[in-house]
Image 1 (cartoon, one colour):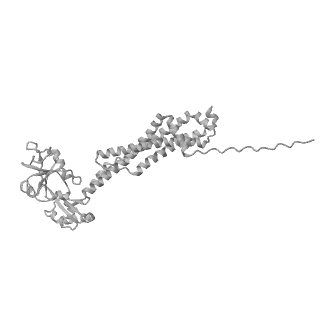
Image 2 (cartoon, helix red, strand yellow; image 1 turned 45 degrees about the horizontal axis):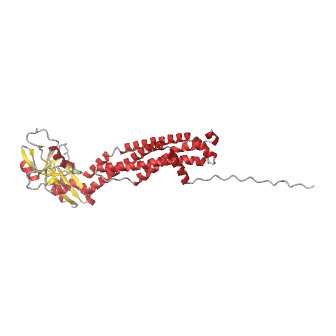
Image 3 (cartoon, helix red, strand yellow; image 1 turned 90 degrees about the vertical axis):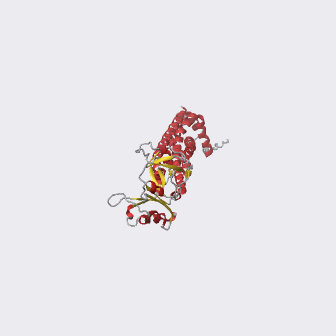
Length: 403
């Protein structure tokens, strides 16, 4: 009797390892989710775009203004100093000596010096305008080389010389008097003076813009000017501005150097520009709020997307998709959604910066970190906003999702 051999035990086949999705596959799944709901994707990305555009514009506009300021200071020069009389020990208004301007020219590093003096008179468009209506304009005696010291330019006409009996108007003074060309006349101290020139704006010497300039000798002869300068303008070598500023007071008035005030107009101009940009922090905060609102919108969209696509998630899980793959799909969709909004926001922010800079005649400057950081921040916001919906999708079991 033969006996049969026992059947051989068959080893079970090993379970195949789940296929890992590459970055391209995950990105394709993310784009697919965006394409299936285009309107919702656009509205969600819009919030991100607004926030990033605000941030880029708030960074770019002050940078453009700063570049314009630097260009303006480089053109006008930061080596100009103003010296004015201060107050005496008893509180009265001091006076600079009549020799103050020649004394300033004797300082070694000084390149040029000039001055103006207060005549104490007002100017009117004609003799029928009431005397009290001065339009806030001053009549100043001016030396012939003043325009060269200030590096100013004439809009029309010519500047004063030693024998000029007429006047030159600052840009603001010409506007307020309604004078747009040389040859017209103004009324000063009961006398007619012919306008011989009109100046262009002078940002470092705004007091000249609001003044009517009369020749030094003419002011002494016709307006009773006492010859004491009210303001002295000194142009020094760039490397020696600080040293000249320190000795200027004692040089102009050796007996009472403490009665001389010396300042640097470029510092005041820089402070003015800084004050004009003081709201940048506020707008940056508003941009951050808009970015936060956009992130909340992305998170809301992704949560709704998970709820609407439960059957899709369950089918993918039933076909072998791992929790990690499902989580990666929704996280990728959130990051791509925010990144697209960030890219659009950067473009809009650049356009806003360029448009505003053009309206102000500034060079358009957008720092590179703002461009790269805009898209990067948007993607980080998308990752944070999509983290919870992605984990929620990954936790769904196939049976629960397909039920």
